[in-house]
Image 1 (cartoon, rainbow, N blue to C red):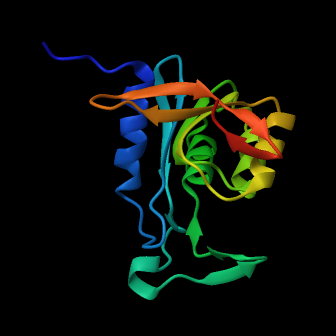
Image 2: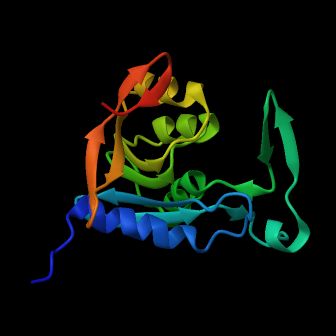
Length: 166
């Protein structure tokens, strides 16, 4: 008998599907904003509307400390939040399901957009993001793959300003 996915698993798979639309060869990120088990908006990382994509023209890399970031691409989380604004749909009270933990800039946008929960698959090396999300009252959960099927969504505990699962 087929195992029906949980709501979290369903939206995690949708975020992974959105990531396949990414046009940045360095990192493919997908995001789904959800409220009451309904998709409110989706996003993936790619160039601004009408501009060349990283996969066509290359990334525009900027060094910040020991990390390099591509500034050509708009991040998936920000694209989903902007999609809400463009379509006149509120993001207040939404859960954001994303393939990678948000960067510090997306964390600020998530708090300002009224998102109440973030579920993510992979870590991202930005210790300030978790602090900003927590200060904004955003619940953090990590989707941990379960061998054989699906995911287990677990609350994230803070460890020295970064994120870790119990």
